[in-house]
Every structure is written in C-alpha cells, then in structure tokens.
Amino acid sequence: MTYNHFHYSIPEAVDLSLKT
Image (cartoon, rainbow, N blue to C red):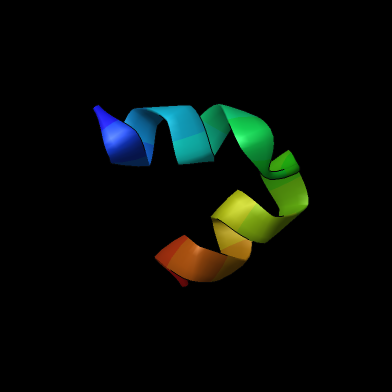
C-alpha cells in the first residue's frame, strides 16, 4: 500500500512519466 499512497502524493503528470 506504500506505492498506492505515493501514487496519490505525486501529480498525475509525474505518474504518467513513471509509467513511460
């Protein structure tokens, strides 16, 4: 659940960058 919390902490733009 740590990643889940981190996911909500960071902006969506950064989240997309990590998935790329």
